[in-house]
Image (cartoon, rainbow, N blue to C red):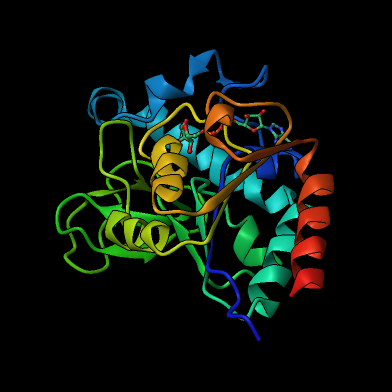
Amino acid sequence: MQDAPNIVILTGAGISAESGLATFRGPDGLWEGHRVESVCTPEALARDPATVHRFYDARRAALASVAPNAAHDALARLDAEWPGDLLIVTQNVDDLHERAGARRLLHMHGELLSALCAACGARQDWHGPMGEGRACAACGAPALRPDIVFFGEMPYAMDRIERALAAADLFVSIGTSGAVYPAAGFVQTARYAGARTVELNLEPSAGSGFFHETRVGPASEVVPAWVNEMLAAG
Ligand code: APR
């Protein structure tokens, strides 16, 4: 049997939109009148920690009222049944992929349900409001912050992502505008390494020209259809 292709999947806010979580650059992309970019920065955390914590406490609380949609469920099924290498790289900080059952998953922009110690770098699970001055479980410093990669900070697991892209036979981008690097450049890295590249998005994105194929439609429709094709082809 021909070896199953190695698959790398990149997901963005669009895969969670039908679960009720706002995207960043769509019409619902503002929060209390703030552009997200103005809240997700180290400078904003230093200048106005109360606002930054309020923003993330609100987003963390919103997770309790949303659920994975058919797109998350389809990717979790592919993850469970695909015999080849597979890695889901998500830019999202929600836990919907996990709740759908995905295992071969990494969050390159951090996670709402995690806290990072600005003093020692330790991470710990975090549910509920954080606010300012929370003590780190590892070092005790009152220095916990949201475990979110802010603009200007280095995304997580880039070595692992680059290795996966170099070995990919198929790169699939789902629900992302292609507006933010390094994720926006993954399609070119994968294509350079010889992978077939497919985009599944509500509308063509800034990076559509780099993909061999773009399928337009809501993730809850186009992702299950694509997963069914992949599993049928085997
Ligand atoms: N199904 C599929 N795609 C959708 C849907 C849907 N129901 N709704 C919206 N989209 C698409 C939009 O067309 C858009 O291309 O999802 C994309 C969302 O783009 P952004 O709001 O820019 O979100 P994303 O690409 O994930 O942003 C990347 O920017 O703000 C930072 O760190 C943040 O991880 C985020 C990064």
